[in-house]
Every structure is written in structure tokens, then in C-alpha cells.
Image (tube, rainbow, N blue to C red; front, side, top):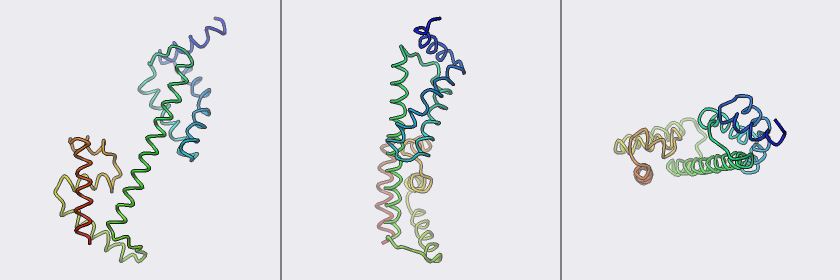
Length: 179
């Protein structure tokens, strides 16, 4: 085999699920992908987690994907990491917004006294209990369990649009109850 045949043979081995080919791809491109992820996420641990998760998912779900050449593989690797970083940033944005919503619901009171904190939690729990069943479940799953709309929709067997609507209505109702 000539050195020109090496990339093609590597891609064929990778498509057949060869662990050595996967290890070669991992060791060759891991740092490059980590730097790309770090540039987007601005956090070393998050970048490492995104790259590790990608390679685990790739090995488990997509290792038989066919690539036309090394450039095709490199493009796939980069775009996969970029998309995962964008998803992570969007998820973090949603979490910050939800935390902001929760602080608004509790009257934006900076409660440092454990008794005040306990009272606020009890008031919120009681208000959530007064919501219609699905609305309360959606709120708890989204704001307390930090699940995505897609995860909530799957668990409750409703559409993502319904989840969005229930969250909006739950926030409106809770704001009214906690005034």
C-alpha cells in the first residue's frame, strides 16, 4: 500500500468499525476539535465534554458512515462539533432565562434567611400545585428538572409547541398567584 492509499484505506477501516482506525482519528483530530469547541464555548471543561461526547456518540451510532475522502471526514467532524457547541450555548441560554423567570416568580427577593427561602419554596410549590395537571408537570420538568422542550414533549407525549404554550401559561399563572 502506498502513502496515497493510506487515507482511503483508513476511511474503509473506519466504515467497517475498526477500533484502530477510530483511535487514529480520535488521536489525530481530538485536539483540533477541542480548540474549535473552546473558541465557541470559552470554557475548557465544556469543550472537552463536547468533544468526548461526540466521539462516544460517533463510535456508538455513526461509525459506519461512509466518507468520500479525508476532507469529507474533517468537515463532518468540525460541523458536528460546531453544532454541538451551538446546541450547548442555546441550552445554557435557556437555563439562564429559566433561572431569571424563577427569580421573578419569587418576587426577586434576595432571601438569605433560611426561613425566608423555605417560605418562598413552599409558596411556589403550593402555586404549582394549583396549576392544571399538564401545565404543572411541564413547568416542573422544564424549570425544576431542567429538561428541554423536546424531552418534555417526549415524556408527556405532546408536541413541542404544546410544551412551549404550557410553559408560557404556567409562568403567567404563577406570576399572578405569587403577587
